[in-house]
Amino acid sequence: MLPIIIIVLLFAGLLALPSFWVQRVMRRYSEPGDRYPGSGGELARHLLDELHLQDVLAEVTDSGDHYDPVARAVRLSKANFHGKSLTAVTVAAHEVGHALQHRDSYRPFMLRQQMVQLSIFAQKLAGVMLILAPLLALLARSPRLASLALFAGVLSMLMSSLVHLVTLPTELDASFGRALPIMQQGGFLKSGDEPHARRVLKAAALTYVAASLVSILNLGRWLTVLRR
Image (cartoon, rainbow, N blue to C red; front, side):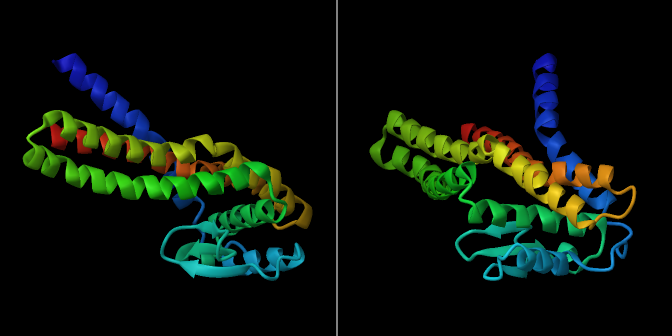
């Protein structure tokens, strides 16, 4: 029994480790908060204008840093929108990289958007199915029917988590195929900051992957509760 518990704890630790690393890198380079003359929001707006993307908005959000292709908006957290740290300006450039992918109809990005829409539907379906599973067992008095509903719900939740795992190339391109060259060519990085900016860009690219792994871990907790 003890070896199984150890294996489960190690597996959980491996799933949570990327998220911990991403958060650690982002926090580390968010200080000093005034390292750069302009904020992340100002840099995003400047880059968008320079790249002839004046129709793309640069906004502050409470929903985490991301690019919204429907609203055509680069959205940054308050800390990165108003902050002047290395993290703030580098994350801003990463999200502008996604706007560039959209402009260029970068195929992996367009495929990712289709998958994200599918995952949103799957996640909603998962929530419904997981709630209905016990009810179906009670009404139909059929454990098999309830198990089928539970399986469908779990599968839907798992799919929504895996979407971000398979779209990692899109994130890496936004960081190292778009954002880094822009910052290098524009001279936006202070001397000696490029190696650190690369770490932030890597963390930005892994953000969704880390979140997906944590979601899989949470799914395991869901299953444990349901089995009780």
